[in-house]
Amino acid sequence: MSDDSFRARVDLADADLKIVIEAEGFEFHGEREQLVRDCRRYTELGARGWVVLRFTWDQVMFEPDYVRRMLEQTARTRRGQPDGTTAGKATG
Image (cartoon, rainbow, N blue to C red; front, top):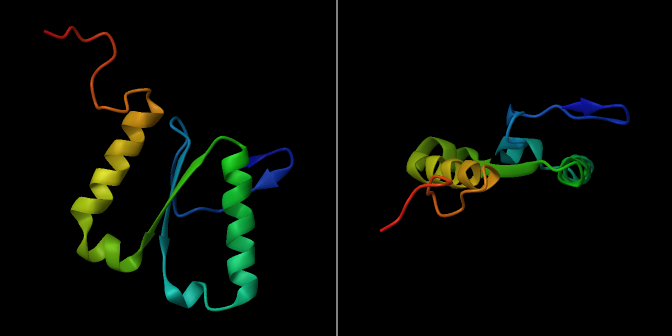
């Protein structure tokens, strides 16, 4: 991700929906400097309209249904469909 004043390297992203997906591991957050850097990056992304979803390595590997559910729910919300219905769909 980048613009004129900011650049961020992320694990995965959907540029159309402005969703960033990060898989977090303990080995990369063992130092204060790493935590501060990541917090700044997540805040910068959020200020630019991005949603950052953070999952642990264990969640990605052992809870794929949870990860998928959160990704799908976030995508629906970003599309303006928080309840999962299709815009303009008739009810009744």
